[in-house]
Image: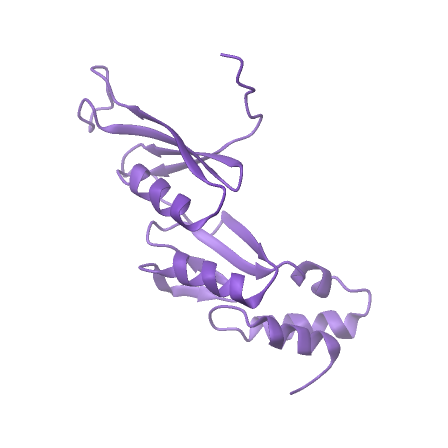
Amino acid sequence: MNNKIQKITTNLWFDHQAEEAATFYTSIFKNSSIRRITRYGKERHESRTEGAVMTVEFELEGIPFVALNGGPTYTFTEAISFIINCETQEELDYYWEKLSEGGDEKAQVCGWLKDKFGVSWQVIPASLNEMISDENPEKSERVMNALLQTKTKIDMGKLRQAYEGNSN
C-alpha cells in the first residue's frame, strides 16, 4: 500500500445515487475512471441494506472525488459548484449538453446549470476571468453586462465581441 494519499478530496453526498452519478460523470469527462466501490457490511447505516453501495471513489480529469450514499439528510445547493473552463465553443457546448441533460432547467443562467443529481456546474470560457478582471473598466463592464444577459449557456463569441467593443 504505497499509494500516495490525496491531501484534499471532494466528497459528494447522495441519497442513493452515488454509483449512478459517478458513472455519469466519468462517461462525460476524458481521463476519468471509477477507482473503487465500497459496500455497506453487516454494521451499516440504519437505512441501508448489507451489500448496498456506500462510497464510490472516482476521478475526473485526474481530480479525486468520493460519492457517498448517505441518505436524504443533505442535498446540494448552488453555494458549491464545479467550474469547467472551456477553450472552445464546441467544448463548452459539449459539457453544457451532457451535464444539463435531465437537470433543472430553471437553474440554468449565466453559464450555471444544475445536473440531474442536483450538483451545480459553471461551464465557462477559460478566458472569462481575464476578461472580467481586465484593467480597462469599460472592457470588463461590457463583458459582465453581456454575461448577465445570458439566459442559459454562454456564447463565447458574444463575450469576445463585448470585450472588444463590437456591438454586432
